[in-house]
Length: 351
Ligand code: AHR
Image (tube, rainbow, N blue to C red; front, side, top):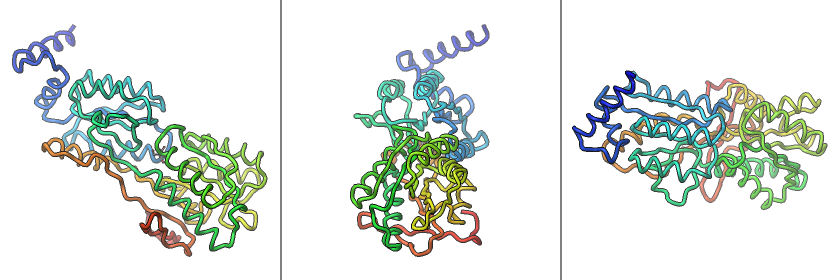
């Protein structure tokens, strides 16, 4: 009863003060701002599948803390778009100031983003992209160039094969993909497929590993049973790589870059999980292409710009590194742009 009364009073106050019955969500926002002086952000996180994701959530929590003047409401989508859509609808009802969406997959966001737009709530997309025809449905996006990440990994492998005189057709590759339909999967998979077609590599099979260690291990075990000749595994994140390494070692095979002598080369993405980085220092993972999860401060900069009435960049790509302990490849050139490779050594301070 108390809640109902409070809601009725708030509604009446809203009509009296601002004459705003036709745009309730917008006015709920200013109500939130004046109530406690904080900015309220509804963050729809897609899940908790990887170390990258945990660090990404942590970055948002640290940035948008109460001590720093924010109310952050986080909803975990548990890898389901339907849950994320429900979360956004709840944020609209609560009249948050901003919605931040880390979408699980690219398609199917038009309706709910239109609802947020109609409510006058700016939406910031973070990490993966949404595929919508009308990009006025969101304010801006910040994240990684996933296809470029894939191109870096593929170019590293290409350079490695040249330096070690490995004929392209002797590279027997499997791809443990991320969540199908996610930008990180689409971009990284495309880059590998393009490189395989361009260089003539033997791309044996691509199978989804959902960006998790457990699925990475399961899929790798199946692929090892199927293809005795496989000598390169392209894992679309570090957690999958950790699972794949377990499966390879359980099968009595050795991970490493010396594929001419029977080792299985592991390539990976992220550079967040400590064990994966340690494996890269030891050469168990031959190359990690960084995917940077620290988006909290970037989202904050966007919100500050919007609050100041400025128009932030619509798309903001993050700069990312490449890590390997193989010291003969120090630079990669992709579309006339050069990218340094950070050579990992055991005495390096934490990345
Ligand atoms: O969208 C970014 C990807 O999602 C990261 O590479 C992966 O680890 C995460 O789950």
